[in-house]
Image (cartoon, rainbow, N blue to C red; front, top):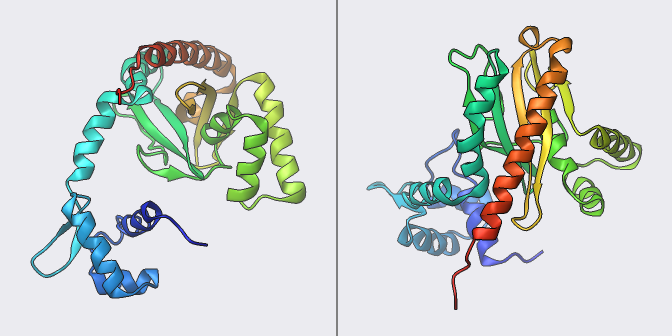
Length: 256
């Protein structure tokens, strides 16, 4: 399959990870299975616009353009702005040590874009801000998936998760059942000893399919306290959706 130039450049950038943050052109070419001459030209173009940065010994790392764009995203992304406005008050109202997370669908993953934690939070969530996580595990992921239109959801799951046949039907059946109740609860599914409760968030005009979650130790959030948490999450999700609608109405695209 022939891919666009943007895809090829992203494929290069995807190789720069926490485990392997510096590459030579020769090593990158071998990893990607392309000619060094072709890759060198693409790397040089990425350096020219700041997405990569070279060292004196011909090694490359991610460049400062990402810092610039990250700042722009923090100041303009409506979901991040909603996190800034609503997560800290939500954590304060909970009355126990917890984390509040806003996560959104991101290609074939779900990713936390904003989070707030209680002081001295004893447990760390695997949903770190900016880290793509699997689509079919966790209350956080399922709540975000539930905000999708059903036909798109089935296509995404079939194409991106490997679920098929009875496994796909079972997952969709459980997802649609929970969609009707409006919230998801998962214990120890991603992080041992943790419980997460999540509700969906959606704004079709902004193209946002997301979820709002509370994450805590199981002993800090016993079953008898969970209805109150669901109520608080649902109320905050409604506030966030109103906030997003206001942002959508106020957005003014650049004129040609």
